[in-house]
Amino acid sequence: MLSAKSLFQEILDNDDSYRLFCSIAAGGEAQGGWENGRIAALVPASLRGLGPKIARHGADEDKHGRIFNALLRQRGLTPAEVPHETDYTLLLERRGIGLAHERLGRDTPLTERDIIVYLCHSRVTEQRASEQMRLLLRLFADHPAVGRAVRMISRDEDNHLAYCHEELLRLAAAGHGRTVRAVLRDCALAEIRVYRDVSLAVMDHMGALLGWTRARNAVLAAGIHATYAYERLGGWRRMVSLRQPARTDALGTGTAPEAEYA
Image (tube, rainbow, N blue to C red; front, side):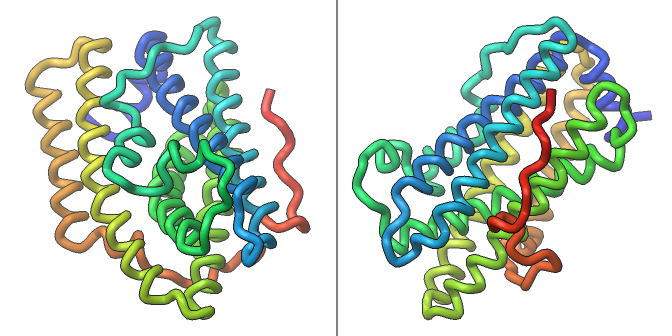
């Protein structure tokens, strides 16, 4: 029977597919760490208080990249080259979502609108990350090899999502509500397309590594397209709603980062 657990278990059990899975994840997290680090360094004076939180976000993403690389080392594997069509972060940037790397590479301070764009991009992508990690947490929280990593990353992603809600609500209350709503909508509608395309590409590569039949590939592709149809018809709205999180100041100085994973 084809289920989420059996699918992920098959990927985890095979060295080649596991190597690709961890490499894709590590690359995305490392990229997020760099982006957040640059944004923290370029925060405008009017929002300087956000700098430490953005830096903490980036440090968490860097840590996640190290975790996935550690999982590879524990199995005696080296990182694989990540196919460009599976690079979620790169494809989002190409669609104009978030802050361009060319902009972050300069030393010119960002504007308040830039920070809104960053937070909206993060709110949408952290929603996806939180949902994915909660799924893995439900399936593999007690797994001897990946359980601890899944628990640690899932907590961090929930904190990142809470932080985005809180800061966007603060900016909306300060008079940026219309901009926040418009940018969130654009980000969400672009993200669901990129997520569909990346999911199809990842499944194609996994299928080739694991020898899946054309029928199985077709079933999985149909599921991905069905998810996109649901999100396009209205599911995307969950990515743009804002509510005060149960845990406030999730990335503040009063919250200690998780101990390093080894």
